[in-house]
Image 1 (cartoon, rainbow, N blue to C red):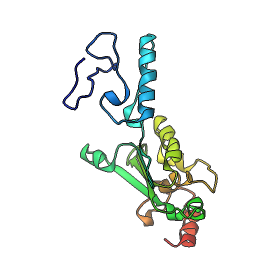
Image 2 (image 1 turned 30 degrees about the horizontal axis):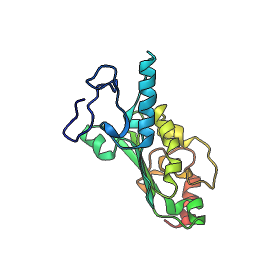
Image 3 (image 1 turned 120 degrees about the vertical axis):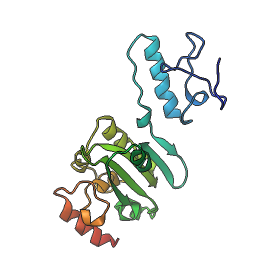
Image 4 (image 1 turned 45 degrees about the vertical axis):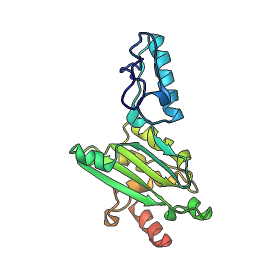
Length: 198
């Protein structure tokens, strides 16, 4: 089997090696060494062998670092989008303003959402903080279905959740300079901001 300069097995777009009928997935091929990536690739190969039409979108497979605090990202970064010449808008929200994080006394970190300036489609979500590995799924679902920042802003979530911050970066008022969507929730957010003192 052929390998690349890093010793990884070389595969084509169907994850097939240079040996016909032999496939490779997971840590032995290019890309992040993540179990959930390998699982997606396994399903892809099984569907390919079954003569179905498999699909895998690597940009929507989140990168997660299971540390304290946890770190996760899905989609493109602000730098990648700027290099590609995309017009973007960003929003961020600190965990120190999240009720559940305050109750748990685990307030380090933030969540950042990046959206297309024209279409409002969410292009990237990046997080560092408590329970991030449990929280990123909402971002993956939103991006898989090409949700806009406004779509996320209109979702209703429980109040005392670590996941709540995904909604917050997209509807902060513009004066915070971290806003994406300035919808009907502006007054609620201003009250929240003054109550947490940031």
